[in-house]
Length: 85
Image (cartoon, rainbow, N blue to C red; front, side):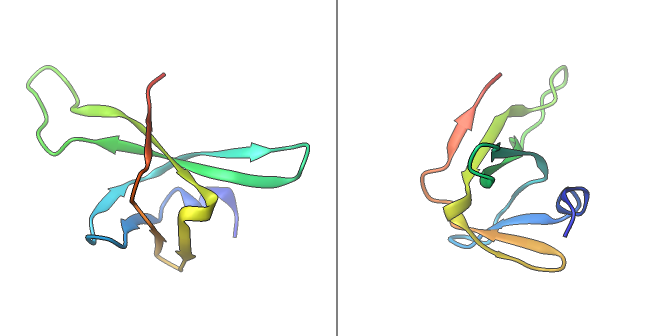
């Protein structure tokens, strides 16, 4: 699977079935040659008139990725970390 193919998959939290958002980046450890996690674009359900409703990005550690299927990525969504740039 290519990184570009990950961007079109839905990220689903296995705890409650919620769609979390699209993959926007991967966190890689180039020295060790491993994927440390995925970064997804999180957004709030209520979008304001002037704002996009975006609440920041969410880091999903690779250990929380349960399964990558042909159309979804299942993750354990407990204790995910919000990151703001």
